[in-house]
Image (cartoon, rainbow, N blue to C red; front, side, top):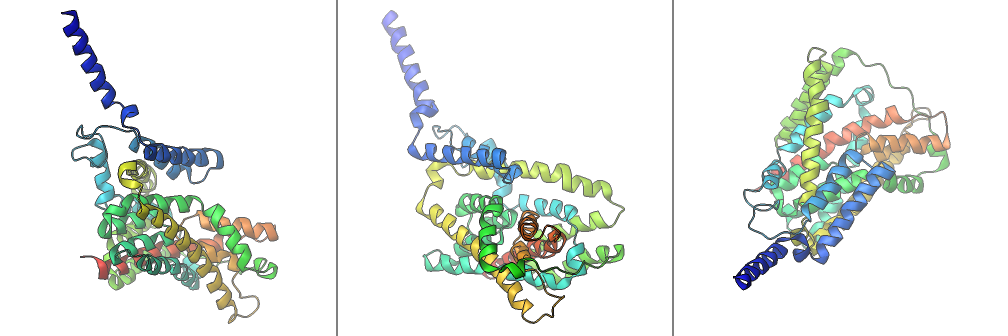
Amino acid sequence: MDATFFNFLTENLIQFWQFTGFANLTAGHLVMIAIGLIFIFLAITKEYEPLLLVPIGFGMLVGNIPFLEGYKIGIYENGSVLGYLYFGVLQGVYPPLIFLGIGAMTDFTALISNPRLVLIGAAAQLGIFAAYTGALALGFLPQEAAAIGIIGGADGPTAIFLSSKLAPHLMGAIAVSAYSYMALVPVIQPPIMRLLTTKKERVIRMKPPRSVSKTEKIIFPIVGLLLTCFLVPSALPLLGMLFFGNILKESGVTKRLADTAKGPLIDTVTILIGLTVGASTQATTFLTTQSVMVFGLGAASFVVATFGGVIFVKIINLFLKEGNKINPLIGNSGVSAVPDSARVSQVIGLEYDKTNHLLMHAMGPNVAGVIGSAIAAGILLSFLYK
């Protein structure tokens, strides 16, 4: 009797041990947990995009708790709670909701008052197509290369949306890469901006933006929707929601809806998208050579995007008269990291002239970059989706 009970107890303890995370731990899990802790550290101590890095970093911890498969625990297991939450990422549900909130928060005044700034936003998309070409050269399929390339737009929701359609198996690496580089905007961009500009260029003063009427602000999202989506209908889920959110804000009669879109809704979706994207970095499926290559290409695309925006402004200035030139320090803000890249323009500009405020000017190409990255994603989707 005692021996039987002892054997029963021993078997149960062994079975329990096999179920624990300690028994299933691998070096990969430790690596991803360490990366998650780094994300949380940077978010809290350096305040690098804390609203993104804290959920993603904690999601990495959640996704890398080792477990035995078959209990519907992991994010990749059918029927698991995390799997259901991840559905919104895999099917591209969350990104349009994020764009709705962005539209409700965004003031397009700077772009409306100086429409030529849209060209800077377009030039900064150079990083997308550079990464696309680089990914093809490294042996990725065209669909995979396009999903990787969109990281250069510095737009996490757009990267998730496009990869959900073209390369869902690379979703985790692409999403984490895109959000990581968005968070590191204040670290990556300044050295490039200083390298490409002269002291004289950094202190260029731009004319104050003209006053924009309420009517113009209401007309803009309507015209913007029709022009961009007639040109690239495949970008409709993103741009449709962006401009819808903006007209909720600018109409003046739907304040409650605008407040919901830019407040509780976008906050809820950000929590879900951050946590599940982080959890998708499960070591058993995430740590691959392809993931490392995605991170490398993402970094390169971000550098090229910043380079393209700054250089494009310098080229434009060759054809502009004195007093009408554009400060090339706002060229970096052509990427879609709103409003962080515009803040970088402001900070670097103030280093060289304490009275030269560039933020309002930089917001023009910054919001143009949001539109530009969505259009670029739509173009790639239109001829690569099968």
